Image (cartoon, rainbow, N blue to C red):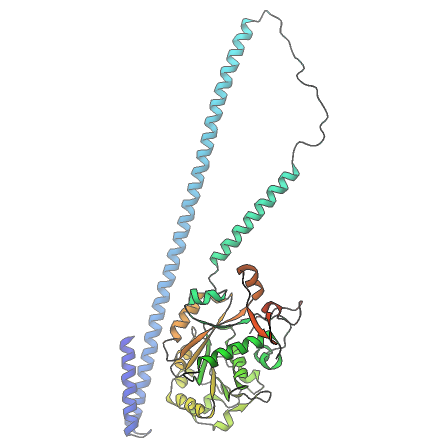
Length: 443
């Protein structure tokens, strides 16, 4: 991989030198561009080969683990069986000893009876007077119910402890620091209630008095405070895998920043663009891809949302290879031009663990907001994604713990988070439209 990367770097250097001397149609420029494409294709094939090798080793390790687990279970079953047989042997030995004592006792009684055979003996005698019992001797229902309750309670506790240890997701705010080794920028509660489609992506505008909106304001404050000494104009928002809510977080942060600064939201998730549809644009509306390619002027690619002061750039037509578009110099030039017009640029990027687009964008962004879905994303996946994206120059502002069920967190982990709301403090657990509505997780 190092050789392939060096070859790609050398091809880029030759192309840069050729671009300074020759025009775009010059044969040497065409040869340099062809060499660069070949070097990038070689790098991609090398990476695919390494990924395939690692995947194969991982599958072999999984098979070995399953085989070892089966052998362990078999050995444990044999040990338990030996224990039962030892118990049965001890019981049989006790029976033999008891039978031997009874035999000796009967033998002595037989000899006594034989010696006194000519004497009359009492056939029977009254030992005690029979009485009618007040109730059944067995079964003792009260005792059985009590034992069943105790056993059920113990099993429930053991099951809860087992599930707790097997859960490897990020569940609480302390997990962000302990498992991910990153600072917590803020939390967003798990919204309850009935919502229209895409309403959560515009919640900052439509639900101005909700505590979800207050949580977004807290995130905005954290972003602005981090930029006091070093202004961070380009803020990228990403996550490890899909369905963690990064687009909703990016849009609501952009809406909130637009209230205090001239802000532009850029949809760089060309693998799965959604911002245009959410904000009411046609799917084929001009956007980032046309702006970078130079086929459309900025005036046709930058839109203003009528319900807010926010400007936004949709993804535009999806190119055949978005990674090449985002890693081009023209994309960096477009961001520089946008920085001259806007005070803050918020970029919605693809998930880190699926494609390399976010890693490329991290090389040109100033700040990074990383979204992790509570009780969903394994911390190993989130930590791996953080390590990948931190290779760029973007400064990690912190992790946003999204869709946190605060009621569950208070009930099981013993803490409650508060946010400022209307000049007072209100618990997140009060958040929601109705007590009977369904929980919405798709944001």
